[in-house]
Structures are given as structure tokens and as C-alpha cells.
Length: 363
Image 1: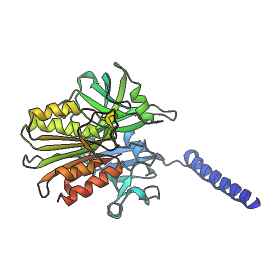
Image 2: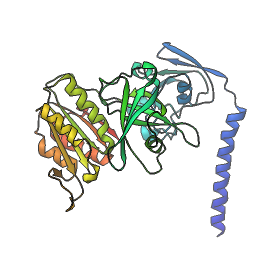
Image 3: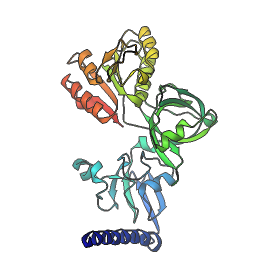
């Protein structure tokens, strides 16, 4: 028993000392005003020292993606710190590979501003904007997924590439948080963004969004994302999704057929049961207009006696393997749970797709 008490007391002392150090730095250490040089003088910011680089940039209307709200748990807020950032912290290393560390890649939410910094941010990231938007409509797609269309206020437009995402600002007991959602509306729609939002138990962002009704106001930033659609019409497009992984697939497909009506494209979408199926009718109607568009849905759970289903069954990577021929020029976009992404990636690589032609978002 005495050993247990010793461990408890020691742990309490360590926790207390850590808290004391944090409070001491906050109240006693004054780093003054520091300069943040972006892209070799393209922009120079003067910010209060002591805050995180992510917070300082947001305060200057430079929006770095951060799905976790700056808590160091998503790894999205990667930027290049050329000097002044100090050593890479243990909280960063799970999200960084060796090559990134050697190149000065850091998590902006973990870099404290204690002196002047030199950083590099892509021009695309510098063009990310904050928008005020209003809910135009909400549609229930399944028992846990809603389609929400936001209209941009004041006649503003958002210019996005197929497959990109936005971050929604949601309230929380600790202040505003940001959550990332892929855009489901096609790129030619510029006066608003449509999202597919799955309600997660206890999820701050999804709970907030599912409660919105027509006319409610929100703040969002964007667009973000690395998906880039190949402009060569001869390259076949493969979209594979599951759950809310449908959103970027819908965006890509409708954008694709608006520009290239004859282009070849496959959509593979995995669901657990018929209760999880949505947009199937819409895609079947699109396929009737565009013969080179092929739609394959698959149910992973056994089909029940009272369910009507004449489509594929089994995990979606099995359908990808079944329908796709090998050694054809393709570009693939995947969005869904990590096990699905990994299984589909293996199949696509067996079909001779190059790693640089496979884009994915895991969630």
C-alpha cells in the first residue's frame, strides 16, 4: 500500500510542477513583440510572443488547417520553419517522417513563438479565406448523415478544386473549435458549399452542424486539400469512398462530367447495409447520361431477408479488384476509414497504379 501512495504522491508532484511551469511561463515570461517572416519577406507579421505559431497566424487571418483545433492530435498544421522554431517536440514526431524533420517541417500548433521566426507557407495556403455563410437547406440522407448546403453571404464566392475541404467553426465549452469537412458540391458551384455530415456520438462539430436549421449563420475557412484532378482526358478516374467519404467523390464526379462528358470514371462506394445507402439513384441517373461512368455500391454486412439488394456484397476493395482491369492509366481518389484506404491502395497498386496517382483522405 505504501508503494501505491508513493507513486500517487510522486505523480501528483510531477503534475503540479508541470502546471506551475506552464503558469510561470504564461504570467512571468514576457517575450515581447516578435517578427514572423513569411516566404523571405513576402509578408512580415509582428505578433505577441508566448503564443503558438498557429494562433498567431490565425490572428492575422492566415488560416492553416487544424482539424483538432490546435491540440496536436491531427497533424494537419504542417508548415516549414526555417529558423527560430527551436527543437522538434515529442508531440510532433508521431506526425512527421524523417525527411520532413530534416526539411524543417513542424506542427504550427506546437511551435511557441519566443523570438523572431522565418517560415515558409505555400501560396495556396496564403489564399485561404474566412467566409460567413447561411444555411440554405438541410436534407436527411441516412439515419446519421445530413446534407447541409451553405450559401456565401454578401455575394462572396469560394473557388475550390474538386476534392477539397473547408473547416467549420463550432462552439465548445473551451471556446471555438474547427472541424474539417469535405465539400460535396461541384467546383462550378461558387456561391456556396454543400457538406455531408455524419453525426458522431459526442462530436462537437457534427452535433453542432446537425442542429442547424435554414437561416442559421456559420463561419468557415477554406478551401484546403491536396487533391488535384488530372487534366488529361485519357486518364481514367477511380473514386472509392465509404460513409461520409462520399462528399469528395460527389464533388469530383459532378465536376468531372461538367468539363469532360465523355471521360471514363468509376465510383466504388462501400456501405454496411441498405440503411447506409445514399445518392445511389442520383448516380445511376448520371450514369444513364454518361455511358463511361460506372457505379458500384457494395454492402459489407450480410443482406437481411427483408432487404432488397441486387448490388455487390463484401468489402469495397473486393469490388475494386473485381471490376478494374490492370495496367490502365488511372488516377484514384479515396476517402474513408483507414482500413478501407489501406486495402484499396494495395489493390490499386496491384493494378499498376503509381503511388503518386493515388490521393486519399483518412478519417
